[in-house]
Image (cartoon, rainbow, N blue to C red; front, side):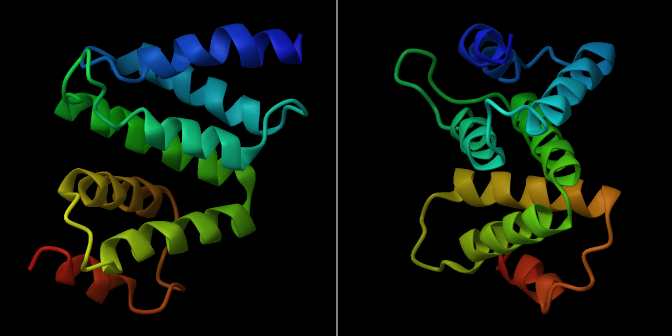
Length: 142
């Protein structure tokens, strides 16, 4: 069952998360799906996180990613992190702040997604234990 979910259902879920129409119960169900996948033996947290973050990259055939889709992706990333536990969540927050600190990065879409993900994680969990996170976020707007 786990391999079927990973090979057949997960790609469809990653397509769905890019939809600008995803909201309400459908979004909640998708978040629950990603949270449950963290506990599956056939999928790793890192692979799921990479898959979710890569859905935000514009594809040649579809063009850019809708703003609403970025919000949905960020919410799913937050749920995924919280389901994975404190250590994984902390390492993800550090990875996202590193994206914001990278001045050479001209990829504003990547930084925008990092801000959205940090915001969604911060909505659900206290991030004050991460040193200078407030300053890093503020500096990303300058």
